[in-house]
Length: 325
Image (cartoon, rainbow, N blue to C red; front, top):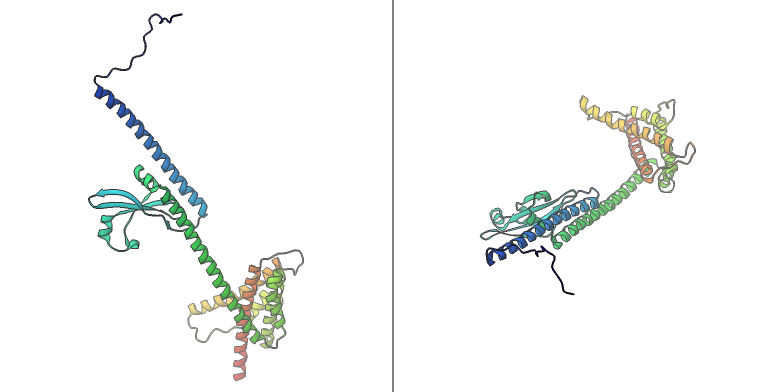
């Protein structure tokens, strides 16, 4: 059977062009408009992607303050013999773009660290620059720079810990030697040894020994000075009674200077109060399964040792002075 067109049917006709050139220009204009729209959409995606990198970096460093910079990025010519460049930086919170130019470098002279840069946040960058700063090499370099900076911080921290540990060991040895010399032949020498050793093996029990040792030192001072023991023979009261007997240094003059010395003496009394409090709340003296960290037990022990050295040295001075009278 033959085909028949419906009555009144007319096929769609393209819009006629006035000329061939006009048709070509219209088609190219539409194509360019589509391309421009795609470029704008792509650049918006790049901006969002770079903002996401900033967020990921911020979350990754967990608040560590640092300064890392990525590789150099070419931004293009901005004038005759003038070339602009820049690089990304990260400070633990924000990504910023620093830029300069060959002409500015020539004006400013100096080395890389002395140059002047224009700093902009991502929100201040043009769409064109966002794309240039967001190259794979640039993004990888800022991640690598942050990682390298954190590794540097870790190395510095480990070195500091090692140095502090060595310093603590030296100080502990010196304290041990000083106390051993001052306590030679005294009955409380074993108490100090137990207090020191228990820090690592039984921190809670070490508080008992540190407290008992300080009490023994104070009793020894008061007995040697023929001074009465306080009514309550605990570390705070015993230390307070000992400190009360300390004379001001002969060279101290003026109300302000004496006030400073009183603060020092008050600090020694605070060691007695703190030692007694730690014993009450964290030691095994009153039963129960109490726990204390080695760090806290060592702090108490070190403070007790320092106070004991000072008390014994002052006792030694007083006894020598009494013999020379």
